[in-house]
Image 1 (cartoon, rainbow, N blue to C red):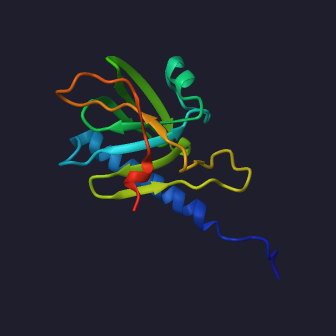
Image 2: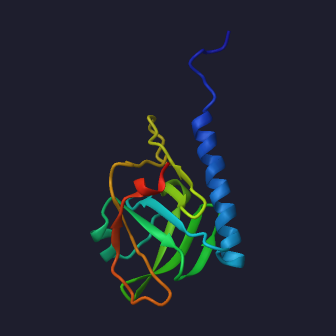
Length: 160
């Protein structure tokens, strides 16, 4: 009989499938814009290899940050390995590059959809992690409102 310790990694496969679904959603948004009231809270590990953010953002958010794609974003580019986008942080446009494996949560509060990528117990360097007890910073930009500094929001209010 074969080695009994081998198992099917359903968790890893589910994470891969969810990354694919999120990529598909973001590709649609890149092509057609955000429909209706849809908007996204995306948190990611700022230390993950391949994450590219401004030095001042990395200093301010040394472990993780949450961005909001809603009113002001541009240059959304969705690739096989992740996505990049330019957001406005207090009247300062900044480009971000986020690999899929760095993503910790994806939430669309307009339809009460969200997914949290669990910590992986193995040594997989590509496994996303997260701590849902922490509050995460985000850039919140309103169309007609004055530009704001990044704020802190708890993702718990978007969970059921």
